[in-house]
Length: 462
Ligand SMILES: Cc1ncc(COP(=O)(O)O)c(C=O)c1O
Image (cartoon, rainbow, N blue to C red):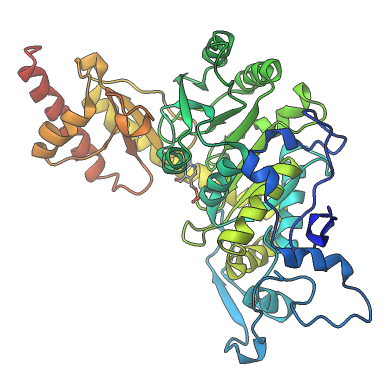
């Protein structure tokens, strides 16, 4: 006998994906075959089954449509907020300060439980942004909100990996993904980057030589623009090369792109280029973040991609935290609505210019003190330099930082933190985001150079 919650019904708080064909892309571009066993068999709680029975003339003793029905919805009459005024700085590119009011229906939504995928207003706005920026017509993909892209990525790993599954990861890798992958006991396959980040050649090599008796990877993870930590950015051609390998081996790309806008010339994303290789889509799960553009503390990010996978993420959200802070979403929406897409893009360009200006000063200081001792890829995006000290004979930056560098009074993140295997690395990651560029940056590099010289003396290289 079928129960109400078993039926594939549409619900206002979570999208119900259309059924895909087995192991292939259905007309909606969804990919149920990418789902982990857990995600494929987990649905939202049983109350969901009641939702389709609601309608005109039906009195519901639980939560009316448009909210998250499992939550005990409080009566907003008791909430002490009447309106919220956002005092906005003048735009970075110049202009006036302005005040924006958060009130009426949007304030009501901000104060109440909401849909797990996010407030419809901001999801719609962001879908429009994705269409505008990445040229993807609406249809075979959707957008879900998360408490930062980190939240969405963690849930996405649960959605697409069974415990012990292999995952291909560009290395060095953003270390923030490691705790979840370790919890999942994922078999992390390191794919070393070159000066354009994830290497299609290396990816192909690994997949072509995959042992016949081992489960093949289905997922590849990359931060393609201004990578944290490598500072590398993949060109359009590089992304097309990677997509070609993905096509050959039927892979899903997790495109972790919080630095996408932090470059003066936007590079076409995997999400944009996907349709050149997979006309039906369904192979790129993209993560955007507001942390580097609006505020990190607002904790807002959004995932864009195949409906099945996003549905699985939303189911996880419904169980973990019901939904991302509706207040954060409403504040961001109000701002975005006020700016419009052009205003948002103009703000993003100003942010990119800001970081590019800092990078130039920072890199000049690095060159002054580290020339001959270290090398790095000059970043066209992001906020990181990945300093390779192997020209000076350094093989283990962790030891250098713990000993010689600390003794000189300078710290940077040792490279080994960014390898799942924890292998020794000659790199350190340094950031030009917030450091004082006049005094601290040059003095820090001077001290790092002294530390390297001390180490070289100890090694008998000087
Ligand atoms: C590569 C990368 N991905 C994801 C995140 C997390 O971003 P969010 O603040 O949106 O969770 C960061 C944060 O620095 C990052 O560097």
